[in-house]
Image (cartoon, rainbow, N blue to C red; front, side):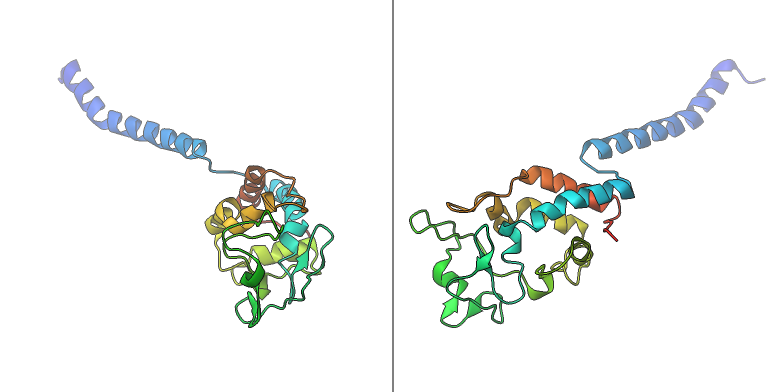
Length: 199
């Protein structure tokens, strides 16, 4: 007959690795949640979209997400002088975006805005005349959102310097009212819940 010690040793040899593995799985799951992974339902996703679109339809964003010519100011008036897209989204010879707009930042003397990569958004990212649902469908489609996956979309809203200009637009223009960090949280929720769009 086996001794009690032998039985306990064999039980420990079999059970402890299984127990340790189970604890490790739960610990890793907790770590993933604490590192900022977002879980959300389809309803959460739609609610987040309703917040996101208020920023996308703000003149700071919408003025450059146009078909052929940018708009200006809080009233989204016609750009003066008239500028057209051109082949690279930065105007045509003799009337380039960089003729007036600095790539390094706003000009406090003239009031002309500027930021790195100042240009019209690519034509496939036009929002002019689109409904909230249409903008939503476009944003979740890599063929029409700059070839971005979910992680890259979050990075675009959180880190892109030109996007960030919306919170620092210079004199005479109203900044985006929603804090940038809050917008990023809504984008994460929208994506986590399935990138739901209004019908």
